[in-house]
Amino acid sequence: MFAGKKVVAFGERDGVQGPAIAECLAAAGADVVFTVTECVV
Amino acid sequence: MMLAVVKGAASTLAHTPDLVLLGSKPTREIPRFDGLYEECMAHLRSYEEAVAYPPNQAFIGNIRPDRLAGLEKPWYENPIEGAPREGPYGEIMPEDEFYGLLKAADVFDLVWLEEGFLSRVAEKLQGHPLLGDLKRLEGGKTISGIKERLDRGEALPLNLNGELVGCVCRAHEEDEDLRAEVILEGLAVKASAFLALRHLLARVSPTAPQDVDYLLDFGEEAIGDRYQRGGGNMAKAVGEMAGCLNASGADVKAFCCAPIHAVTSAAALVQAGIFKRVALIGGGSLAKLGMKFQFHIKKDMPILEDVLGAMAILVGEDDGVSPVIRTDAIGMHRIGAGSSAKEIFEEVVVKPLDKLGKRIVDIDKYATEFHNPEVTVSAGRPDTPLINYRALGALAALRGEIGRGEIGDFVRKHGMPGFSPTQGHIPSAIPFMGHARDMMMGGEIENAMFVGKGSLFLARMTNLSDGVSVILERNPAIKGGD
Image (cartoon, rainbow over all chains, first blue to last red; front, side):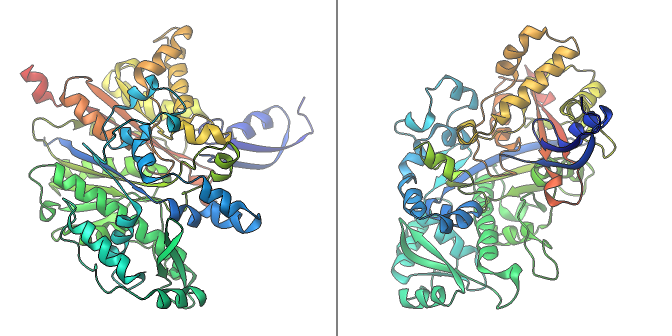
């Protein structure tokens, strides 16, 4: 379902971090155009 | 082999409601919206409310963090009646006295306090059981001189209950890294860390300031000038103020992970025989004051991010009673490891436990992130301690140590509610240090694991995060004596 889609991976430090999201979505065929993790506390 | 132990831990708060307006978020947001200043002022807490606030009482050690779970919420509407200013680990200092500490911390005549205010504060501080020897509490300024500096845009105001009582001046005409905002941020760290160190040394007997060999500062704030932003060295600046004349020191930088990196470094220095007593210090974050103030105003609750937190920990040689730092099982998030929660916890929690032949459930208490959930959840953020404990519980379930239905019990038994102000490095595991030490020495628990996590990616130099852990165990000499 992600093949050919452009994705912004926005992660959270104590939840799921950006690179982990990006890795999963890239494996599912997405084009990850930007990855970032933020600390929201 | 000489073991390294935690000989004491101090935790202090400075209630600084007027400095909330100088926090990063309020500084940016208040000028953008008409009426926001008035809303902000109307939602600030009194000193008495801050003292009676249950998480603050847990922070200075008057109640165990676990007890918060049984107290009615919201905690800000259910104060602890008769709660004292002082606790076994430190105190909650009022704003006027903290301004006096800022003045005492300033060696470049940058903190200007109005003469009448300064003399009143000096008198109060002279009556403080630990601060009677403070220097530089003289040389008050006229209010017109203070206003002149403010009018020229060379200073930031120091208000008390909204009334001008002083200012903090820039230290250079052109250097952005020495502007008044940066100077105040640095002095707030120095003054609050000094207060924690003073409480620490008063509580670990016998430890005179001259007995400290080395200081490690684990705060996140960067001090320096335009040619060496973040050059440091806060550790020596605080040590000088505290009279640690025989010590040297350095700063440890790793975002919120720095406190646990500092604990492991201190343990190594002691165990290697390089130093006998290493003091770890971290002051409060001015920038984080009022970070979620608009959410709190919207919910018509007090602005809870109104305190500067500070910690000090003394690591020393084995004394036969203090908890031992297990240097043979330091957990660390390797650069090459993955970044999922499972991978981080496997690196930082499971691997060191494997070294000791222990399971996750063999650690009595985990200290992870202690951000007060009342501050974060009201702003649409997660209950950070809870999600970390759930992740640990899930990992224990994955490993077959507990059933999937037992994760809630794991969280209650091995975790605790968050009780720390949201001050970056301060909530990172270490607020439990004093509690853990007392609980181990009192036989309530055998061990605890302190897990620090750091958001390295915020500096935009890497996408990596950081993680490090250390295990504290009841001193084997006590065990032998049982």
